[in-house]
Length: 288
Image (cartoon, rainbow, N blue to C red; front, side, top):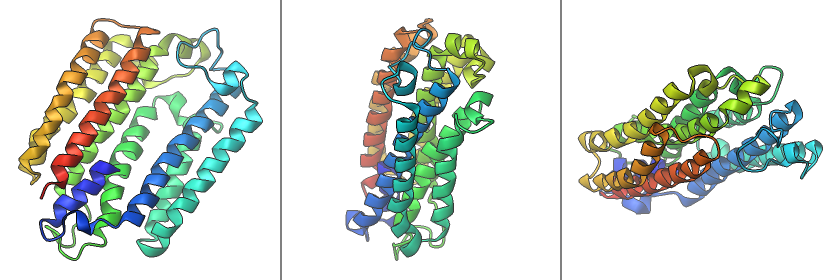
């Protein structure tokens, strides 16, 4: 959300700057992003718990509500529905006052959150989870947050262009980092997922190739930094290269064969890489 909004500021040029940000739109979009993430987590907890995938005896990750018996399936399902409903409510002002097509995006995001592990044929069980995370938490979140701002700018670097080039490059970078989080999660869970019949991408690829995939997902955002400068971002965006320091340890541990509970720390470290990269790219893109 921050990166996409900053890309809109940069696209507007010095004539607009931070004063161009429509903060109520940013707030609505941020609420949508957070609520759909929380709703997806509840829905995942509910569906996996009902299927028995989160058996405490086989799970190595953090405790899950349904699988551990801390909450009833009904209560967790209700929490997911409430979050998804709140997602649509939070996005309604954007649909009414920015673009009605954003409503379709919101419904698609909610559907993607539910059917990740829910429904008769969950796509997360078919190895498609990483693709959907890249699309929704990378492309849709970043480009979408750019769009809700650029719709309001009178002067942009490329009039009529919905998504400036910097936003596209940044969206790919953020999508890779979001996907890397899921890849580590699924790498950790290969034994349990294999036993339960959950055919995640990590199960399909095997541990060795999943480790290579994780490394690529960390490397691509670093490569995107000079590309951002080439497509018009301020050289200040090079600050994002400091994330290499944070990423180095995680990549070495993954390539070195870390497995099981060892990957819980790597998951947290990967989230920190995403945070550092996102904040520094935001600063670089917002400089006009």
